[in-house]
Image (cartoon, rainbow, N blue to C red; front, side, top):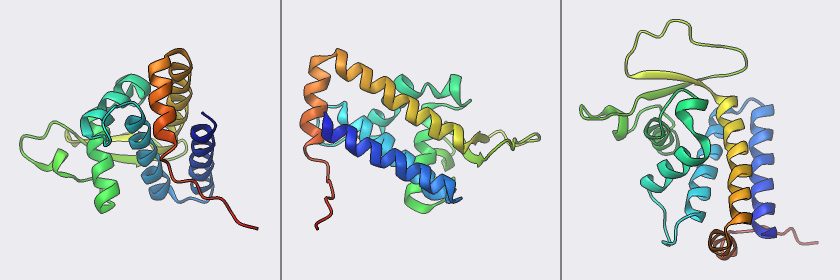
Length: 166
């Protein structure tokens, strides 16, 4: 578990540095990447997918309660931001799409007059906090579930880990 804890610590610290210096888009990209990685740790397959991301988000972030959006909205936001640096992805652009576009506020700013039915606003810092909290919840689950611990530990051995040479 030391490898996984070390990797997560570095990820959270990097997210914090990006936030501290105002690199909000990069902070969000790394947060979504972190969610992807956590979802991957929970599945037996070698690769995870959107369904795994959404399941992990529902279980550990509970976005409807904590952020006012759905796991599908976050998946669409992740795809748009990571692939094109926009709020748009095929998951919220098609006529049959159920996901809404997510735009972000920071600090105490709130959107007080959103007239668009296909757009929601969430606080970027709150998403990051929920990700950090979700890691702690997931970590508790790992320690109480031997199968999950074995799965996560074995996958953690595959995570790249940079060690600075002297």
